[in-house]
Image 1 (cartoon, rainbow, N blue to C red):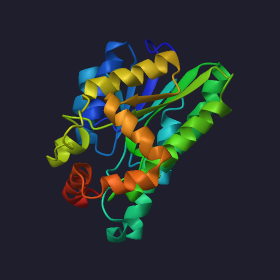
Image 2: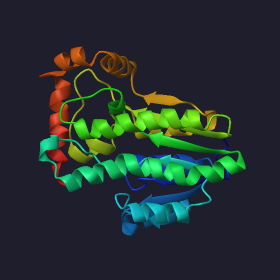
Image 3: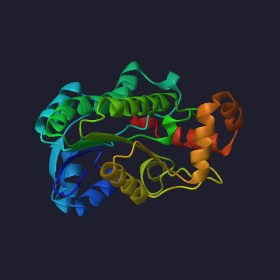
Image 4: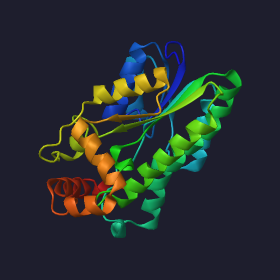
Length: 263
């Protein structure tokens, strides 16, 4: 899939990772459409990249429908937006749970469903879903976040099979711990000892590579984290015992405490 000249809808454009992805796409000649909840945060980013903007709250189904209609000419969808959704589920209100499920899971599914038919008719297009290594292995204080990321992984891999042969690709990009953006930049937390991080530019490069090469699943993480997540996905009971009281568990708890007001 050629990015140059293609109309690309990017959700979550105002976050640090979203801005890095937008910059990488702009360099490659994409016609960018950026979306976020706040127009005042979107406009400076759009001005930098010569992008069009559509303001939308992705927790609101009607606004998601309006977004899809406003972006009906999309050639490439990059679903990057997500809420932190960390912390003990028992601390969440039903409304907060609904919001997390809507932004992190329902919206990518609905945008893919709305935009894919035109791509199929054209015989070209791509849908890239930015998930997380947390979609492969569960951790304490992350049950809701895990649920949305596990769900995204299942949806993306299944939808890819549905669209095989149509000329439309579907990819899943799963970052590990990202420095200088996302949860570490927002909370001041530090990654567990011995676990290396990746940069936002590495994630953006992976997104571009997935689109251009129609890759199925790209795990953007150091080899040790990829191996640990693969092991934990296959042997969750053993992984659970290893995690208890570990540095990883302390890091997740630190992040959850710092993100309590972002639900």
